[in-house]
Image 1: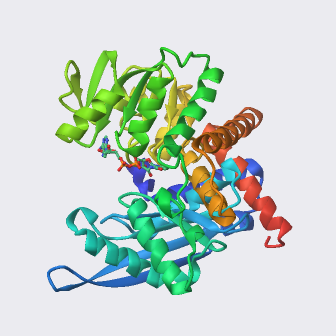
Image 2: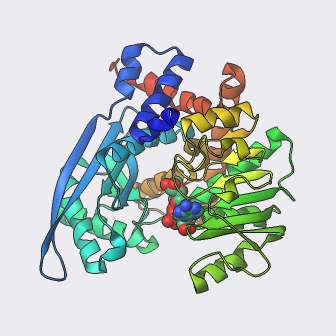
Length: 417
Ligand code: NAD
């Protein structure tokens, strides 16, 4: 496993930035600037728990680069949160914002805690305590957090409220992914998956397959995975397999994601859906089909299974599902990789729309939001695909190059490098 020792996400993203630096012919010192976050905050959050004890939670916020605008990125509540992971995710956010051209830099935050074992009251105290720790360093013009793993619109509402109390007036634009009533945007719920759909629609054109009737397998059946399966199904694709953490299901005739979702709501898993063959959670990645959509976790396509991937397109709705070594195998096999920083950028793009609407105090219809999203995603795909063709590099490096070029041009114009 020597080759895959680089599974530390911070090392992975640093390596990706170095690769992009080579492609763009950037000097070593400019690459060095990009390899480190500009600011990383570490806070301790003491919380009086329901049983009367006091527990200390550790939280982090990383702001990678703000040459193009304020930092932007989610807040994760998960027991495995580490400072390295938060820094890496903030760097991927810089790349993601740059690919779609939204005027932001990268940020990310996290608190090491397990919300599954906490009451709503305890989660609220952690959320407010986290904002108390970082509020001087965030704001609509500085750094705008959003939801991520195990955080949701309710938690965003508490955080926005805490920030507003500290400032003394309502600041809706400090956080995105809020409930609609408190300045959220129409379309935010499905935004990531819709962005994935728009990217796949462009991808099938260059590969020469018809999305109508194309076979699709989706790993993960949460926000990104369920909506991706549903939207692709609505577009005429045949969903042959889906999985969640408990296992997967396969049907040669195709699955109806709406019915699978009903089944999951009743039983807690997609497994056991009638007239399907049970498969493992990771088998969805290697099953014969035209398009694979990883929409669960990082490090799912590795050197162990990359050779077994049979699809013509891998569309990464998840963040970091393919390791760098597996990436090379996928490229050698001639599979079109639609990388995460492009394919799941619909979420941050609609977050940007939410912030714009908050700044305006004027709100758009869902149709307006989706129309604007489509134009941005299609344009981003075209830019990445042109870079891929022109430089004869893999799609992930091409996406990184489109993005880093923007960031570096901005840094040069500002006189930073
Ligand atoms: P979620 O918690 O709603 O869903 C995650 C799904 O993955 C669940 O169905 C879970 O059962 C499944 N899963 C967990 N372990 C699995 C395994 N070993 N095999 C198969 N399935 C497994 O999370 P989400 O918001 O859908 O996020 C999924 C991925 O998409 C993450 O990488 C996230 O960073 C990325 N993403 C999400 C958004 C968004 O707006 N939701 C935006 C950008 C990127």
